[in-house]
Length: 220
Length: 220
DNA sequence: AATATTTTTTAGTCGAGGCTAAAAATTTAT
DNA sequence: ATAAATTTTTAGCCTCGACTAAAAAATATT
Image (tube, rainbow over all chains, first blue to last red; front, side):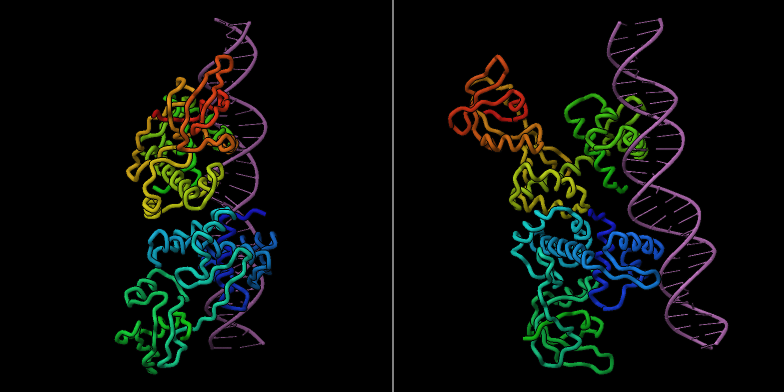
């Protein structure tokens, strides 16, 4: 069955919200991310349920069905591959690519996206460290930890971000924090949970807990 | 003013029709290319006229205004650049790219299309030999001649096609006719105006007038 | 010049995907 | 346990871009 632009967006957003919780997704949460009103979301959820892409009982929130998740994963795959293209091949910064990828993710051509995947050398993650599903819709296993959960004096590498708003990414760039940076937490301030971090062996800089929470790292 | 997907399509199609005639474009001609009905076209032409993108008087046909042509040229630029990308970078054949480019041409990002242009080395023509407007909307001058208009025993080079339907392109491919092929007309048959052509100095093959008419060449 | 044919426009309708305002259900607070 | 607050749904409406059927204008034919 064909999926419209709007339907793909809803499925993608429900998928994104499902990544960070096991609970059913609320109408309001969806409305916020789709930039629409709750009433419009209710309408669409009924339609998606009718097509078998979500399980939805009124007032109970929504979850993707297996088929819905498959569609969502294919949209996410396209979004993230295009982001890699935009950064690696077109020379955009990591904070500039989201809006463009929001459009490109709806281009309909299995053949194109698989050729693009190959052209980009089958990347495992997008420019923000988010995993890219392969053509079977399988996500690579990435076991990342939040920088805010790390002990002092452990070496680690910046692997991704848990939030990819442009302002956040620009802040990281200003702090010289980019994918692959070597980090070490030097000090954790119990007062406000801010931390002092050395980036690529430089002099430590201060980072708020809020920022540290949204930085994903792997040890070693 | 923002242009919708549908509006861009109409403007592009009116532009294409205007390329091959000086007359005003008829409602029916537009309907055929947009794959809609004449009544729907009438509606849209009124809207486009209101926005100042076409001159339209009922029963009199339609022409692009300067502003309308600017928009059309930007869509054509995007379409043709994406086609180059699909063939040169993604490895598609020249008969496979039209539908995908029809989608990509509506991606909205000046920055992206200019970076793409650079990435592709500022191509002058798309994979069918059609000229690509530069970022100021100026078309490169290409003075091509139809193969059907050529005299016998003149050397020439295949520079483009006047029609890019997949079946036609596949036929050319089967005849070993691709952009850059060196051609020489050996014989013109007055009976059906079919011609006998040597391709890259090989044994001459027969080509119908219909095909020759749609092959664009430059001399020498 | 009158009539037949073709093209184009008008009038009314539809589905997709939004919206607002009001009602209903659920959750939170007293 | 009730009342208050919040969330979600319903009902009704809107715009965009299509459609069909019928009317009107333009063009072609005799």
